[in-house]
Image 1 (cartoon, rainbow, N blue to C red):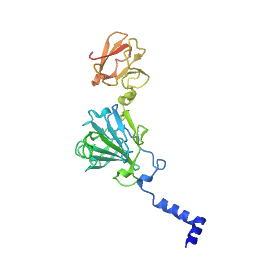
Image 2 (cartoon, helix red, strand yellow):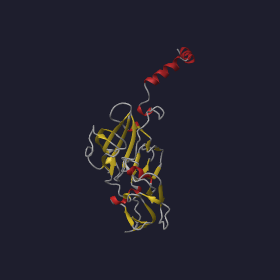
Image 3 (spheres, helix red, strand yellow):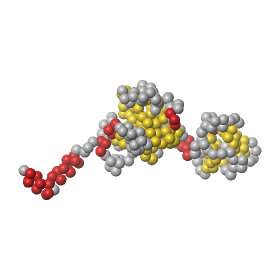
Length: 293
């Protein structure tokens, strides 16, 4: 028998049989590699456009999942969680580990999972509900085994069949085309590009701590930026502006002066903090950060 086995092996018969078996019975959903999986949706951070977050993979059996929270985890509790991409809610449930949990199917076998939500899992969405990237699905909480600190445990998963996935199906997460993966990795300041279109999407690239002035009336076009007071700005004619909203102690207003005379106050948090300057444009002569203006 041993000689016959060796003969089959040398002839390639057994190798061919093993190849057929491996093809017919793959190692499971998680065995699909990035090369064999269909392209993922354009996943974005599951938070409002322009907000900044801290991401961690940690190690052991946590990676490639991500824990996400406000930098330093101050004030994360209760902040809104949005869908990462368009799809259909595939499950809302309680689990002793993940707490209030929502799963979303994004098509082609792609799913996302959201753990530790503050409210009962079907408070914002229910199974079968369609969602878009702007759809609120819950709030950051600390339910389940969240070790009593508010954060969102987020996973991107791939499972070619079914409408429910498990942690074994998770894959490295990508947001805005950038992969965030690896053991014990962290990213302290990642800005959400989960934007619904329109002018806000055009303004999303304003650097943190800067004031941005755009040439297009819809917040697009040539941009002039500054992170400091400019007594003699070279911005020239600008029809739109955006105060990126980064709060600086005692300086969350920006006073803009026009060469033609007059000025306007940009105030973080106000609707007037972004939009069009008067038709025809004006020349921005200077601007400066202020506590009030």
